[in-house]
Image (cartoon, rainbow, N blue to C red; front, side):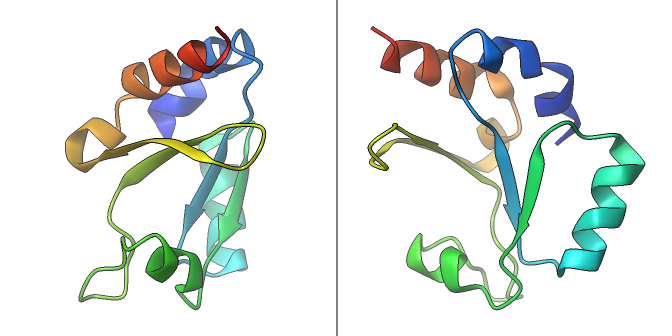
Length: 100
C-alpha cells in the first residue's frame, strides 16, 4: 500500500482511481489507512466474497496480493499477482495503456 501511496501521482495522470481491498474488517482498515496516511480508499471484504469471486482467497482465508486493473466499463483488463502486485509500475503502465 505504501508504494501505491507514494506513486499516486502516476495514477492521477492516467485518470485512474485506486482502491485497496483486503479481508480485514472496517475498523482494522481504518486504523491501517490512518497509520499510513493513505489518500485512497480501502475496502473491506471481511467475508471474503470478492476474494472468492476473483479466486485469490488462500487457505488462511486471506486474499493473496493481487492487483486488478479494471476499465471504466468494469471489465478486468489486467491481473498482476505475487510480488509484482506490490510494485506500482506494472499497474501504472496498464492504466496508461487504457488511455490510448
